[in-house]
Length: 158
Figure 1 (spheres, rainbow, N blue to C red):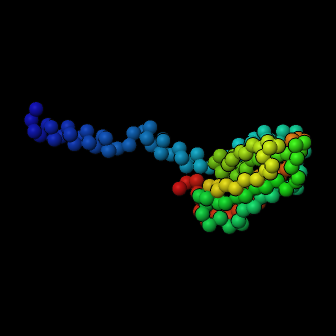
Figure 2: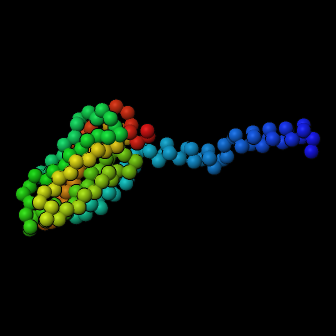
């Protein structure tokens, strides 16, 4: 093998490795679509949690800032304000971010021994949107609360 052939073959191999493959190009395009809101997934998560229960917009406190300075960590506090007893207690609370790529942010489960149903979390938001909180009580009722939050720039694409 001559030196000239070696250099030519090495340069062509290096050029081929430097160009992205068609699979890599498709993979690079996927995240943009994966970060888009999924309204169908939001409606499905809401329907799965509520089922056929009656929804009451009272008894659940949702506390979050109206302006989220850091979209990667927006503080959210939840608390069931109804009295908790052995017979009537909160079984589960979920938080949904309506315009996030994956709307179900978190799920908390409680027992009568918990004593109270409250939680504090930080949520990553893709854009300004409505945050929904739903609490399922042991008597079958679903408590609901929602609040708008404005964020400066998306936290999911960071």
